[in-house]
Image (cartoon, rainbow, N blue to C red; front, side):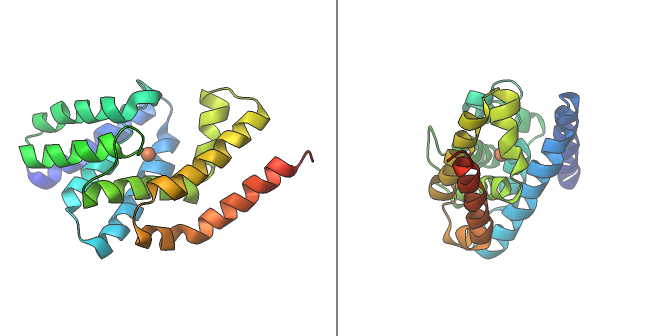
Amino acid sequence: MRKNNRLKEIEKYVSQEFSKHNLHWFDEYHVKLMWKLALKLNEIKKGNEEVIKLAVLLHDAARMKDPEHHDTIGAKESKKFLKKYGYSESIIKQVSHCIETHRCINKKPKTLEAKIISSADAMAHLKFLPILFWVPFRIKKMDIEDGIRWIRKKIDRDWKQKILLPEAKEMIKKEYQIASKILDQLQKIKE
Ligand SMILES: [Fe+2]
């Protein structure tokens, strides 16, 4: 398979997988948005574009199987998956590091590409807040107050721990401020 074709194939495969689980919107409003943000960051930082594109496409692929461990499982599975498509050991290693560290929970991003991925993932949350309502209310079935508290914590964690590049912070500062204000208001509504 030609180089550009395999990336297109993977893009199609990922979209179909999300659609199968009725998560077409997740692909549209998260993966595709993150793709744009990651590439925009990479225009400034000049990392390996191929690694970044592959990591964006695959970073949440294991989410449907196991949301709590999708970073570790996704990293493992990406190795087999990319090998099947004939990617080099070096690309596979770099992509799987990006996936394993994109939540900045178990392991921290060490490479530039991994820092771009964790930053762009958090930026995509802040740019499209509805995605943050989906997890506590649809997946975790939390009540309203716990859910709002969960989202408040999540945006702060995104801002403080996942957006590792100063350029990314600058790009998304306004959205973070707006999101914080909305969440503050929602938390005060019963006072
Ligand atoms: Fe993500």
